[in-house]
Length: 301
Image 1 (cartoon, rainbow, N blue to C red):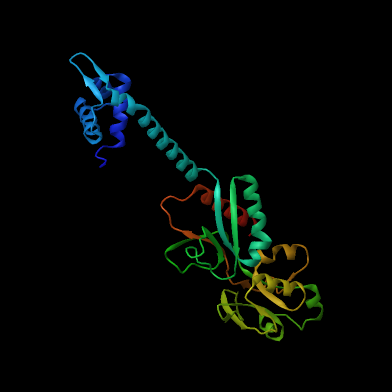
Image 2: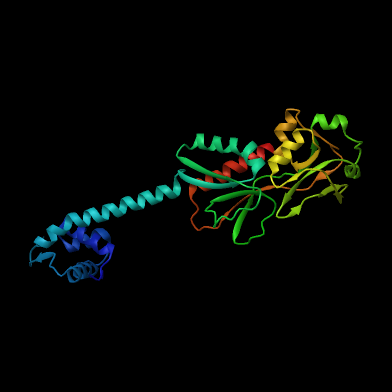
């Protein structure tokens, strides 16, 4: 059956049934009598029945109209419930969030921040994927990816969560036996543990000194595509690492790692970004999580 009537027509029919008067229904809804009459006519033509019994003095529901009332009430009520539920899903902090995280930052800093978020909003569930490569939000079904560095894909949105730079550090065990290190150029004489990603070794370390860029080619007997492994090798005293200050903050605070050449350079910027899809209607749980991440990371940087 072709639906030549609208939800508004059904709502008008209910109002006429409640008032038993088309003029009164029109007055309550601030529309014309003709609009009400046309709506009833569309329903009757589409359904192939007479819904009202009209006389010069009265307006009553026909048997078909009486039978239709509970179905219309149920249908409109169900639609109202559906709208409310969709509104709640859009505006309440609940539901699943799928997040891609860097291996080191994710495990040693962001996990605690995410735990705090779930304690605050227990109706949120999290699905976490750890990788030091840029994960594909569409292919991997992710809502959000946290990554270091600027965004190159213009189809996505990147929101900087805080300021952050790389820093040099080593464990006390390495410092006790290491060659002399008085300036950046001395790094060429050290075992430097570096990161390897997308078949590219990051063994050309970039610094800023007196507002000038300084590049130091380094070498070492260990490299990995996993940032957490690089950090663990540093903690074990195998060499010097050059990593995000956020990754190293707890180890430095506990004395497990010692900053090197402190105050003699500025590390290369490596701010964490939240990368997500552009949506007209962003789920409120994601908006709340972004604000939570930004607030907590800015308090640490």
